[in-house]
Length: 293
Ligand code: NAP
Image (cartoon, rainbow, N blue to C red; front, side, top):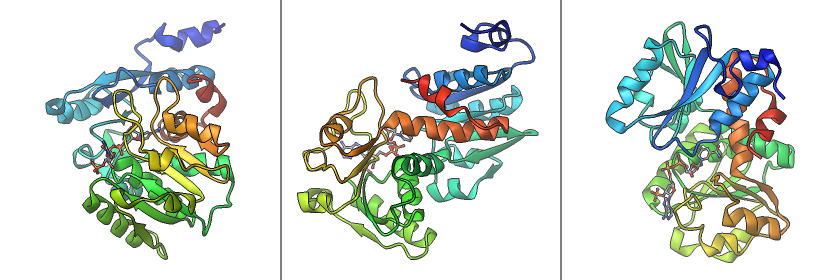
């Protein structure tokens, strides 16, 4: 049971006062988001007088909403689908990694300055190090997708020294991501395989498989069979998608006895980086993980 102090400090939104520092999540939709549960649990655990609120925003209101963070004295916000790219041009300052990824998922309001960060890159890095240690240099990773999540994942894995193969529905986006990676991470060479040409051998040859598409999200189709059918026990599978129940890819990867990093583990890891940016405190990882499991 929560202590009186924890209750006064806003656990579960019970007691928010005029002194409470507010952060939130801007997106459309945000009703499914697990981030409020993760952050509010962490604020309560560290007895921080902070609260995290969902902020559903329609596209025409994005500029006003972001400016409103400053006007309303927010400490910051997470940015989620579909605004991680479009928010970049609305900020006063953008971190170098967020520029590379062309996506901001965390805003910090610092003395009225709107600063943008991308915590997905560190989130992928930390989740992968948790699962496999620093053993992946020179090994191959197949990244399926070329959107914001794929850019973050591919950058993190290339920096860990992995050889990247990109597969994407729209070939031009994969080409662009390959060029970005090769420019950003010296020594990286990126293979591209067209979506209609991926073979079981391609999949088997990779130590790590990453689903960075939106396939597997509620209401969308599963990842293709070439991916789910060819997972082996020697592989690490990272599925960035998270849903109420485990995705088909995660279920199949567990059945194959692969090492699995699911979307919720990644969500917690990227949230921990955002928490540290807003609070300057070390994130209570176990509390955050327990809040979503
Ligand atoms: P995005 O920028 O819109 O990119 C979507 C990607 O999915 C693109 O590569 C797109 O291919 C591909 N795609 C969509 N529908 C497809 C289909 N029917 N067949 C094949 N490919 C398809 O989205 P994002 O920001 O990268 O997010 C992707 C997923 O990652 C989302 O589910 C998001 O929630 C999740 N995510 C999770 C975390 C976490 O912490 N767990 C963090 C970030 C993102 P095209 O280029 O051809 O359109």
